[in-house]
Image (cartoon, rainbow, N blue to C red; front, top):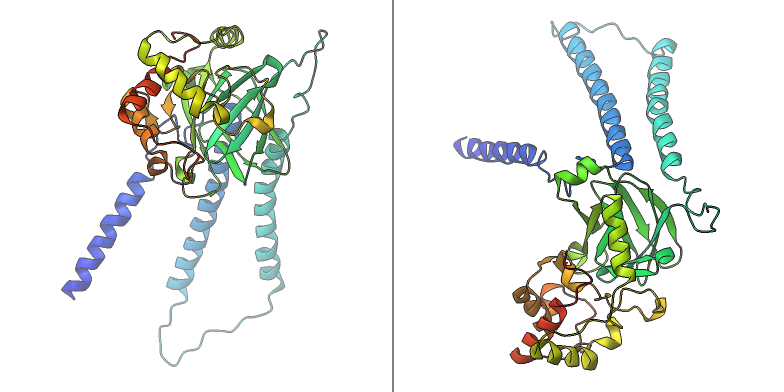
Amino acid sequence: MKKWLRKWRLASIIAILALVLSGCGEPFLSALKPAGEVAKQQYDLILFSLGIMVLVIIVVVVLFTIVLVRFRRKHDNEIPKQVEGSHLLEIIWTVIPIIIILVIAVPTIAATFSQGDVSAMNKKGKDGNRENLVVNVRAHLYWWEFEYEDLGILTSQDLVIPTDQKVYFNVESADIKHSFWIPPLGGKLDANPENVNKFFLSVDQDKADEVNNIFYGKCAELCGPSHALMDFKVKALPKDQFDQWVADMQNAEEPVPTSELAQKGEDIFNESCITCHGEVTPSNETPKSARVAPNLANFGNKEKIAGILDHNEEELKRWLKDPDKIKPGNKMSGGNYPDLNDEQLDALAAYLMELKVSDK
């Protein structure tokens, strides 16, 4: 008996902890703290459906309790009156679920069609240019590529978008199926190798201010050993700051190493890395088929290294020394990446950390 009580207490503690932890969530990562129009609409649908389900549970529990008390067996030899084939009851328990389904389905379908409306994506102004910002998202094992086709900009791992306006996305995959998801902004759309999916998101400026303009994005489709590490960062900037970022990227000059160590690092990059990573430029002139590794033009300004590590030289050298240990199955492993000694690691890290489009 005592042994059973100990197990019951342990189970109770675990259940309470699970309930408490289920309410935890950072605003830059939690889907339960919406930061945009799409996420808010999805969140409201969750609460609406949850409210109806709770109401159904309450009604069922009340009816069950009434029946349990009122029709409990009082005498062993007494058999309650048997009632079956009540047309009224059958109509009630058939019609009520249909009504509940319709009540949930109507706003859900309306929201689905509303969020799926991308007709404005290709709307053009008098100058012949698209009126709305469109970003081409391309998922790779295990990193993300973002192309601003109309602006001539190509980035990786850091998605930069303006606040308080709709941003449209073309989502696809370069290899296997992935899923593009920014929990606080909504979405979760499949990235497929055989077709392009389209949708839009938006960010409220006041919500962006709460998280210092940085949200976290993830892959939501199991895609391999490093699926859980396939993260990216979203910089949500006011329109004027976004326009300045665009100007900086479009006018970026070829980087020039500022030290002898960084110059050695550039030589190592050109010998060992440029084949996959391409030229150190934020331009999208590189053909899509040749983009087999992240664009490093703005590496020094990125939020994270490999999407998950703190952005500093020590973490960069740890990544360069053994990338497969940090992200198993990534394409820098398996003989595609040469072993570097400590001196070469110092030089390459120094060069990469200098790759900045701006000092901001």
